[in-house]
Length: 108
Image 1 (cartoon, rainbow, N blue to C red):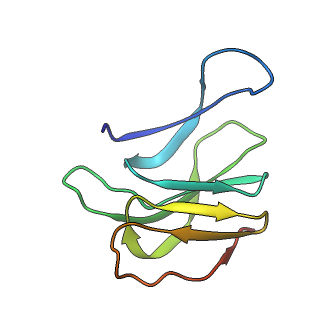
Image 2 (cartoon, rainbow, N blue to C red):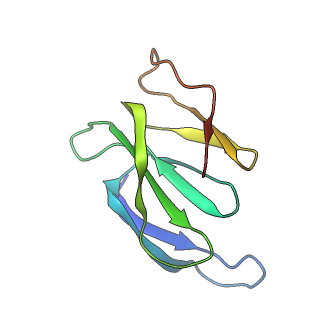
């Protein structure tokens, strides 16, 4: 799988291909993402050589542009998934399996 730093979006109400939104702060693969409708978060992943990442980037969905630094995960992780009910998100991970996760974090 190729490691990329691109963010693309689709206008769901029209037919067509994905369009460039902006770039993440670094190249990655297997990063997770979630949204509260206003902000989108991208977290974890891995870089060339297989090292896991602890970064969290965010975008403002209403405006095209590059991601900004949001903070860090408690541990470097890849294959991250996340769920959101709006203001809160809960990450789940596959690697490292033994790592404890926070029960939730608030997206502000």
